[in-house]
Amino acid sequence: MRNFILISLLIPALLAINSCSTIQSDKVYRNGVVVSSDKIASEIGVNALKGGGNAIDAACATALALAVTYPQAGNIGGGGFALIYLADSQKVYYLDFRETAPAAATTDMYIKADGEVDHQRALWGPSSAGTPGTVAGLYELNRRFGSKAWRDNVQPARLLADTGFFISAPLADKLVEYSEELHTYPATAAIFFPGGKAPQAGDRLLQSDLGSTLIAVETDGRDGFYLGETAQRIVDYCADNGGLISMDDLASYFPVWREPVVFGYRNLDIHCAGLPSSGGIVMGQILKMLEQFELERYTPEAPQYMHLFAEASRRAYADRSQYPGDPDFTEDLTEGLLDRAYIASRVESIDPNQATPSADILPGLPRGHGESDQTTHLVTADAAGNIVSLTYTINRTFGSKAVVPGCGFLLNNEMDDFSAAPGVPNSFGLIGGEANKIEGGKRMLSSMSPTIIFQSGQPYMALGSPGGSKIITAVAQTIINYHLFDLTIGEAVSVPRFHHQWLPDKLYLEQGGYDINTIQKLISMGHDVQERSRYSEVMAVGFSPDGAFMIGAADPRQPGGHVSGF
Ligand code: DON
Image (cartoon, rainbow, N blue to C red; front, side, top):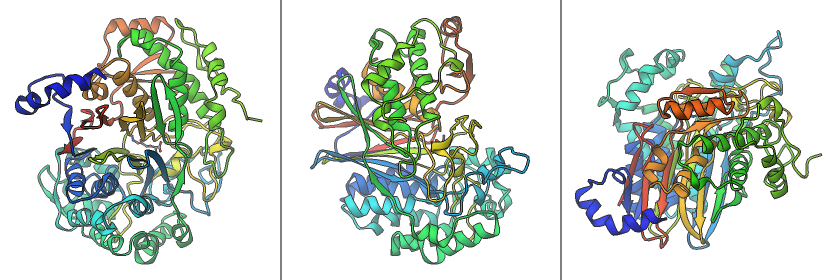
């Protein structure tokens, strides 16, 4: 952590002249910080802290504000996962507010008469939506750990919807990019293309239907969404348009407190989302395999490091295709998948100089066994030392693209995260089978990886990312960049990233990120290398060892990403 020692000596100079190119993007704060994908939402979160709220209130306020100002992914029609660290008890809590399959959902619901998967129905409109979890999740976070009244967390978002906000350039660009898709649904087009035109950056966007839904949520808490008029509108819209969500599905939705996945990596204790997210398991497998190698000898762009990382990923994602699923429906194999002897057996097959074809790697036999691009991550931290690391999503950019008429919010298309048929890739190219098949009331397997890390018992780093299947590798690489390659938080989130997920058997490199020598070396090692344009968007906070200050970093890949603090 020499960065922190350096930075602490430099703080006054940094604040005064802000001219150090390496650290410029890293913001240093003592009293609280919020990092999110949108400037207004980060500022709303900091307002919550300044108004006497804690990190949990700030996370709720930020997430609700994102539902208004960042409709690509911010939501009340989706779901997610949160890790919460409470400084008083020094405990990490994990809340699962993932969507569930409606009770009427069936394993073959997306299989057409010709036996093919109907990707259209799995990804578009109400037929692709799971029962949303966001409002119940945020309400539960506030109920259990917040220090402010629920309505204080909702009110700023409701005001943004009712009185409008000035559209950011990134949102204006996204609306143009997705114009055709969003025009498929009249209620969606009416909101985001007022007067039939794409709004310009700086135009004010009013969302009065969303404002009305938020008033119900502000006044009646979770019941304002899951019972009464809002619920009825969701159900009626689904019934008329091929969706399955019923009043019963909504009334019986509940978030679940679960145990996070916890594993050691070098001298760090890493806490990450457990099932029904695969994030903690897959990241744990990758990092535990890599622990056997002296990675600090390398740099983030060294082919040897990239090769070892890709080989560990290949093996971990092979297991992901078979074992993990909603633990309330399938056997929870977390322990076996992270077992020391099992990891060692997986490492044995890694050739340090040559890629193993994915065809030669099958999911292993752990002990105990008989990405488009929008999701969003936020981190909040307060002066008392509490931290929230929260990832939530409506799955693809603008979710199912369908706004519930009269309610003003987009429904998710999270059902595509289930395995619609064995071996058939979903929109992130991920395949799955029995453990992640569709069943009524079940939660679809996720890759979301909200993470909080400790060193010697003290908070060290909190981070997460969107990116579908690429989330896990992006978060793991950021941890290695920061911890082993000794980059600043800002550098750690910014440097080029790469990704391997077993199938397809390709090593994806961020476009323009790697020089020809690196690329040729990786090819000579047997990797099928392909460039891809964007690599997830990591939001992170680093903490000084004494807890005296924190540094936020928003990934420059997210043009709206913003660190706010005081
Ligand atoms: O839960 C998951 O893994 C996916 N629904 C996340 C989607 C996502 O990250 C899209 N953004 N890039």
